[in-house]
Image 1 (cartoon, each protein chain N blue to C red):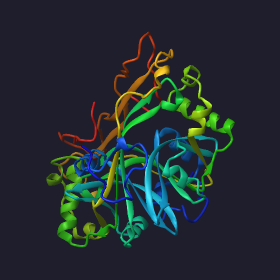
Image 2: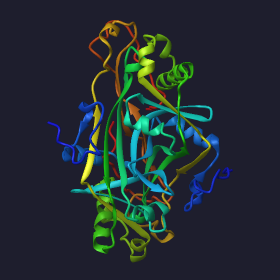
Image 3: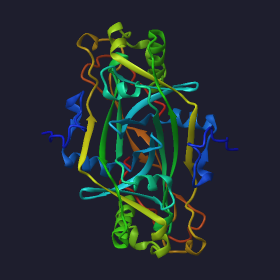
Image 4: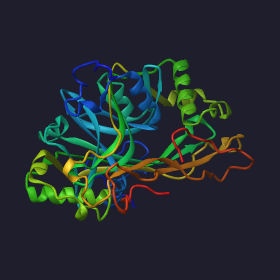
Length: 215
Length: 215
């Protein structure tokens, strides 16, 4: 079951079978992707910036320095486009034309608001840190008032969004399937290497795990 | 040595030490990233789309269906922003404030041109396929005239670009380094799982390797 698009703007024009407007799908992609790319307009140009994001219910958050040009632009009342993409595999067909990628991508449009309430800001930063590594927040040196002030948090309500995904084998033309070359999928995923202690680690501390990697 | 920015627009306003305008750095990031996010303006909104890209000298290419709304918008003579990002690690500090990411990101601005010359288009598609898996092109069923016509290729000359990178350990405040929690970096990279044959594989074909993954 594919949900209906919220608006005509996000409706996929081509490859409809790859489109999905179900909030469950969109939330799952946003949650699985460690980072996103936020597009905004500065001086009549599109500007696309990578940033970490996190989600709480229908709201997606990102943060940065209160002095950042991007964050100030994002808080100016204009529509942004936040796109999070996970590459799941390279799809190798018998023709160049049918080579493809398996992926999950979610695109969210909206006008972000700057989080001005300190309690909401702190709660959202906790959500962010806990997302990077569940259980870490309570062990950290607590956030100071000055740090909170220096951090800008933006919140975007997910009201207009779409997902686009592809999975499965290549879609070779029927007459090509016996062409003498391998066809299939090379699955890919984000993997972690061994944690690197910094020079101050002095004790039997356990390096954090993150849910964004798999073996 | 960090090269000078080409234009004031791409000059980093903050965290100058993370900025780099050297074409060698920018090319290396574009080459290492399998995909990018292209930002363009449609109906006065920023729209950010993930796509594979490839590079030849000072030109970065991407492609899609000739019928695609994105490709038509990209060929309309407007400036686009192409950003390619590689996540290299999660940086765990003793305070939430100094948590960070190690990454490499390249941002290229320009007005793309649609590749109309069939020979250039075919050469660029060969470059793309060879980038996904070196040596594969010559074994594929050759591209047909109809496929070439159905494929739109866009070319963007890298004249205005910047890179932003972070590497190394967390930057904890001096008074925090003895806080009783682990600090350091969890390195991450794109890894491949075992190739999945499609149902037509019938013979001793070798699955392709891709330069985008490491163990």
